[in-house]
Image (cartoon, rainbow, N blue to C red):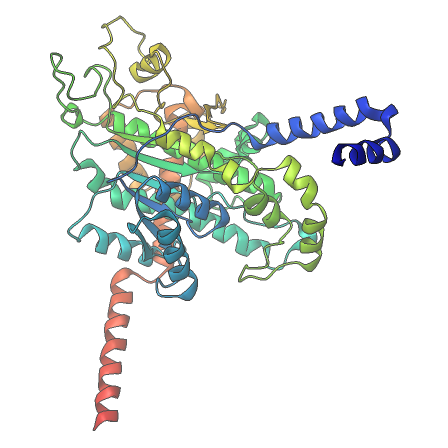
Length: 483
């Protein structure tokens, strides 16, 4: 009976002469949807007893990351700019603990726009009894900053400042926590993961590369007018910085390399000739996300404290069916991040030792190991997108003599010290992402900008004195009331 009714309705309302067209359209929609969501990781990893520090965990993308990590048993420390006893933060933590049956989820207050707040968190964390960290997951640089001109509700200069400060926050966190990571047991697999937006390709184009390097060495260089180029510049700086950090880690003394026993399989490490560092620095680009990219470009985030555009919200809701088809959900966007968390590293990969072979001066043993391994392993210092390594070509900066002629005091001070250290450590020039010179230029620019940022904001000692004075004042007022 039911089939007869369906047959009648189908023959009456379904235009059978267009069957091929309809089926083709439906298949095309599914194909576009599948392609736009990108690859999903085919790896899995048990994260029990692994401590992961997450920044930007209270954005749509960050919440998805927190849920994925919590479901796998990770011990999570999520940094929040809001007080941890605020209703929003406490509610999210409670919900995650309940839904994932994981009580090892904690929030800590840390305002990434304040260097003193970052220093305060690191000071308290490093002075605690438990200082273990298995991964630093910086997702706060992924959400797009800046709306199209028609949808703006705050000055562009404010976006430029926020963009710069969030990048400096990543650098400051790494430099403050790195000594603790270096003193961790060398058998521990530690990962530093920076999550960036997809617009790095705009800044790496040859036509924009000179402006990119000029922005590193000159205070007079104005931020790009295009929000996409500004975001791409921020993303590219983080990519180059992460690659240079890996060079520094790989150049550390051989004492950092765990001793391997060739006659035992109990320690899953590779041969000491291929072993570089148990700390791996990686950059990940999740792609174009609806909530963290498109909604912010249209200024359609009605939960933002900086306001939102009514026209942007209307346009976002109107285009939502098309966005569901062509852009990523948060679940699809986190796949590349999970992939680099789950992949085995050269440090942990179980394989036979690599035979010593003659290699070129700039040939990387880790790269050789990655390409010759029977299954995929994580490439240290690489950029990942769609669960695969991105072969990004970045033009090299001008030679030292040419750049130094136009350089002002911005690259001095710590920059010179870093340069001397790089020369002392004899960092190899692998040619990736502009080579060692590009990495050193970016590192020095971050150091110089960090000094300016710290000088322009209250120091940790000043904040602690203010907090102590406020506490004493509250005690005095309480005593006066009681008397």
